[in-house]
Amino acid sequence: MSLPHSIHVVSHPLVQHKLTKMRDKLTSSANFRRLLREMGLLLGYDATRDLPLVHTHIETPIESMDAPLLDGKKLVIVPILRAGLGLAEGLMDLMPLARMGHVGLYRDPRTLQAVEYYFRTPGDISDRDVIVCDPMLATAHSAIAAVDRLKETGAKRLKFICVLASEQGARAFAEVHPDVPVFTAAVDAKLNDHGYIVPGLGDAGDRLFGTR
Ligand code: PRP
Ligand code: URA
Image (tube, rainbow, N blue to C red; front, side, top):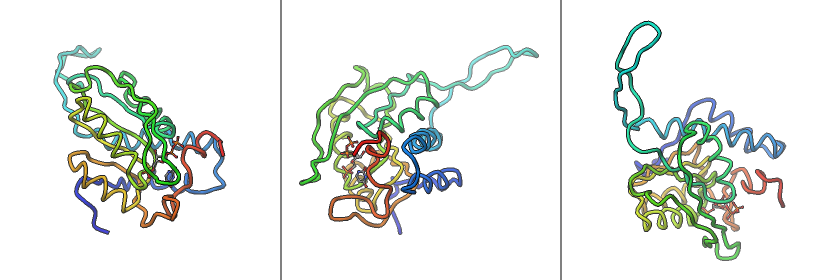
C-alpha cells in the first residue's frame, strides 16, 4: 500500500506488540488504558524527532560543557475528546511541561460528521508546535475538523498522532492537510458501513472508559 508522504507508520516492535494487545477484544479496559498511554509515549517519541535544540553551558560534577536542550516555546498537546485523553497522558509523560488544549468532538452516528461541543486552547498557540492526538483516524472527519479549527485560531506547526488509521481516512486527511504529518502504528484497509475501522480495535472511547 503506497501512502501519501505525510503519513508515517511507526513500525517499532514495541509499538506493533502493543497495538496487537489493544486490538484484542479480551484486553481489559484497565490494560487498554495503560497501553494507550504507552502508545502516546512511543508515538510521541517518533513524532518529536525534529524538535530544534539549542546548546547551553552547564557544569557536570566533573567539568563544564556545552550541552543540548530543547529550543523555543513549550509544545501544545491537543487531545480530541474523549479518547484522545488516553494518548495525551503518554505525551504528557514525555513532555511534562507542555501546554494542553482540548477539542470536544463526537461523530454523529448517522452522518459520520464531526460535531463540536468544546474548544479551548492556549492564547499564544500560533507561536508553538502543536500535537493533536486521537487514537482513531477512521473517516478522518474528526481529525480534519479539529485541525481546521486549530488553524483558524492561528496554529501553524501541527502534527497528528493516532494509533490506527484507515487507508481512506489517511488519504482524506493528507489531501486536506498535506502540511500536517501523521504518525500512526498501522493503517487498516477498510471501514465498515458504520464507519468503524476493520479489523480495527473497536470503539476506542468505550474501551478506554469502559462505557457502552
Ligand atoms: C471516535 C474517535 C475519533 C473519531 C474517529 O470518537 O475517538 O474522535 O471517532 O472517527 P472519524 O475519523 O470517522 O471522525 P467518537 O466520535 O466515537 O467520540 P468519543 O471519543 O467521545 O467516544
Ligand atoms: N471511532 C472509533 O473509536 N473506532 C473506529 O473504528 C472508528 C471510529
